[in-house]
Amino acid sequence: MRQKSHTTRGAFALVMGAVLLGTTACGAQSLNAAENDEVGGEVVLIEAPSEDLAAGVINSIEPSSELADLVPASLRSEGLKVTSSVGYPPMEMFGADGEVVVGVDPSIARAIARTLGVDLTITDQEFNAQIPGVLTGRFDFLISSMTDNEERRETVTFVDYVRAGNGFLVQDGNPGGVAVPADLCGKIVSVVDNGSSMFLAEEIDAQCATDGEAAVDILKFEGDTEAILAVKSGRAAATITDYPVAVYRADTEDSELEAIAIEGGESPWGIAIDKKNTELVDLVQQALQELIDSGAYLEILDAWGVGQMAVDSAVVNDGQ
Image (cartoon, rainbow, N blue to C red; front, side, top):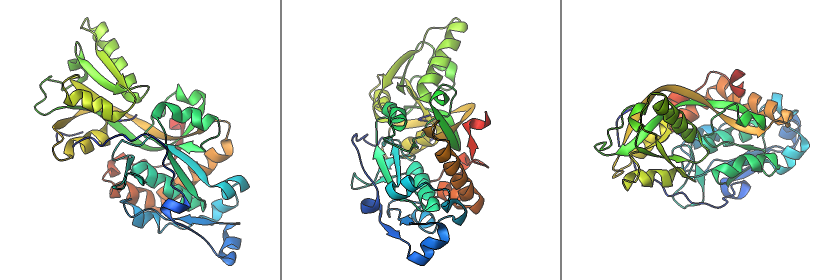
């Protein structure tokens, strides 16, 4: 989505533009010739930056000998080109230098690259531009807290990597009295345009109409940071966001925000790949499954404090 508990966190600034993380930023090394022969050709081991809380886990991952022969030559030579929309902690955010990208999603991408033995470039891209970037071939895949849903499956295939529910972020003291979805009837809610939060707000609005209640006034923004600022300024009674993001935002010192769980409605988040690129879909699915089976996957999630989002297996398109 780009979204259970009562607590308090502040907003990171959403910095737009491209941030490229490959051998230069992350560090990388090639295996020697003998090792290359064992795993099927030129192999690159990227290194996670020190600010990646899962760096120790990621940097201990060895390339998969079983998957090496399946990596196409183009991917071996060019590396994985990945996009994520930065500014959604703890899922994706800039490090202290404002350049290095860290978070749950970059960690998973780095772990997949290590498993495949390929280089990795991560580019910050506005949320709505990510799927078009995948479809034009600019990116191999996107991993950006994106909900796997039927509409998006018309153009991309998802390899689901976590499941998450939703939460409200409201001002301290909850002056709007927003505790359950029905409380939004007749109120203003801020959301990320074209994200799952927008779709959920529209569903709540439709239910308000069915119940004969006042409509929900939905304010749409390009990013999560702007939606949260609308709440902090009093322009919106609440914003809808994902469970890990709500808690992270509220727990930040001086956030002036509270996180409120929205019960039920957990949904899969997927790594989106052009549906025509079935070879890469299979490769990413198998790499993620190896990470799940080895335990590295859960260690990565635990490093970021979101182990409760873990899935048991790497499923494509929510098993549909």
